[in-house]
Amino acid sequence: MAVPFAFYWQHLVDHGIDLMIDDLLTVARWSGSASNRQPWEIIVVRDRALLRQLADCEGYAKHLAGAPLGVALVMAGEEGRADHESYDEGRLSERLMLAADAHGVGSCIGWLIGEGQERARQLLGVAEGKKVRTILSLGYPDEAARAARSRPEQPRKPLDTITRVIG
Image 1 (cartoon, rainbow, N blue to C red):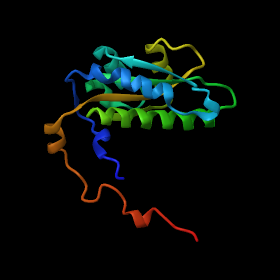
Image 2: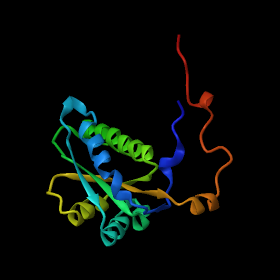
Image 3: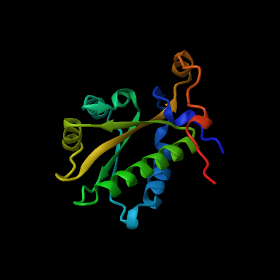
């Protein structure tokens, strides 16, 4: 099965995006995690001014500035569980992106670094000690912007250059 590229579009528009939020939150609730701890909180951000502020945080989330909706993943920040939480955060973000795609909603993953994590934590009113690194932007793909975007001839490496079969 080929996974569609739709969930990596960075130009998103709002056409009633709220209709699928409950489904995304249900996916988050049922998403697997190490030891089934679910070390996360989900913050849905509809406030466009706040999304623009989050886009200005240090990292790779500029696309939030134009997004109709953001979903911040707040990780517990448990001592000695950083590897588990990082893995769970990746699993959760990918599942949310695929769930959005099932609704025809595009998404783009944002990653905060350095002081951007602390600034986002403050902007979102998250308790000290918790981690805010990943924020997804969600919206219906802007087909005109997508069509106008230049694309590399080969957007992905050929399969035979990234795989090996042993035995």
